Length: 172
Figure 1: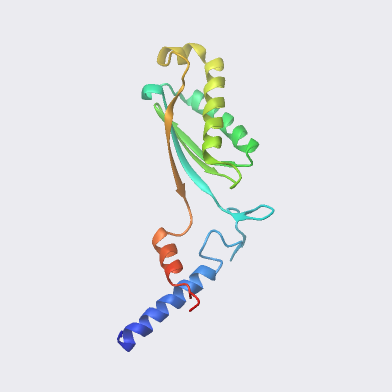
Figure 2 (figure 1 turned 30 degrees about the vertical axis):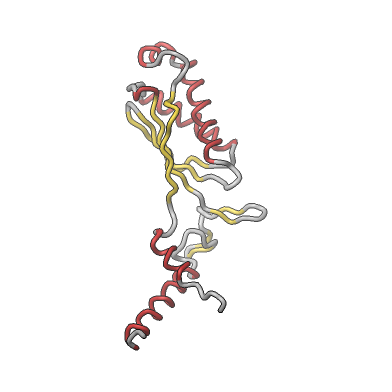
C-alpha cells in the first residue's frame, strides 16, 4: 500500500489532469477558449474535430526544381485543392528540392486521397506553366516522388493523453 503522502500527491495529480482535460483553455479540442471560439475546432454533423497534418513532398530524384515563382504557384494550387476537400492550407513553404505543408483537414477527407490530389494537380499545372524550366530538371512523366512524409500534429502531448486515459475511473 502506498504511503498516505504519495497517495495524496497522486490524487492531486489526477485531479489536476482531470481539471486540465476538462478546462477548455488547455486543449485544442475544447470548443471554447478564454478568448472565445477556438478557430482550430471545427464541427461536422456528428463530429467535433481538430486534425492537422504536416506533409513533405519531394520532386522525383529530389531535383532542385523549385524557384520562388514555382513555389508561389504550387501554394496557390494547393490552397484551391484543399478548399475542394473542405480542408485549409494553414502554412506552406519550401526550398529548392522539397515543400512543406500544414493542412487542417476534416475527418471525412482521407489523408492519402488528399495527398494524391494535392500532388496530382500541383504536378500537372506547373509542368504546363513552366515547361522549359521544369524540363531542365525533370523528364519523363513524373514530377513528385511517389513517397511523402506525413505526421499528425497539434493537441496535447501524447504522454498527457496517455496518462489521462490510464486514470479514467473504470467501473468495478
